[in-house]
Length: 184
Image 1 (cartoon, rainbow, N blue to C red):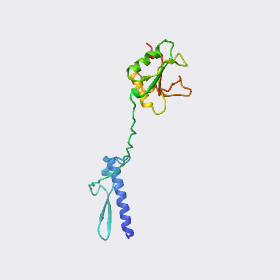
Image 2: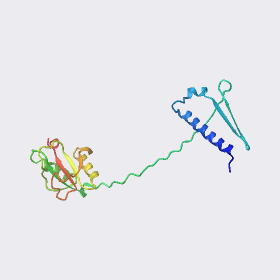
Image 3: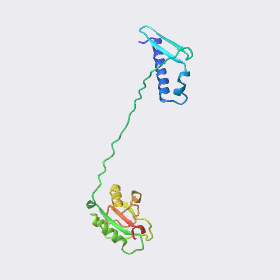
Image 4: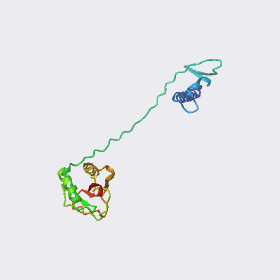
């Protein structure tokens, strides 16, 4: 069992270590250029007793070397494996959201040439859509982003299929609604 004096000594030693750590790390209010103006405390440990003395820089110059160990824990969660299906494994249906005749058929043919299985193109419920949008069902967001990239779009042009759907999916996992940005 430790004696009361030894416990106090340990508390003092820990306190000094903390202050030294802040001084080394540049804790606000304790700057390295002001270190010579601070009083110093020397702690000596012997087998039976400890002594402590405080001196000021005007009478004694003391050099202190302190080592501060900061333990850190880094949690790195493994990114989930996303399996992206190939175009041959996906079915796409294209809808025309413009007044340009044949716009959906043109994009559907372009996707078929890249290996996508396509359903019969159709007209969308709207015919004045400015930007082409790719919609996905279920877990096919990554595949929708790949398809969007294949026709010159970005991930911001990819959305989950809404209810009601912009067109009848006819069993397709992905839907493309062609806007005027894809017709010219």
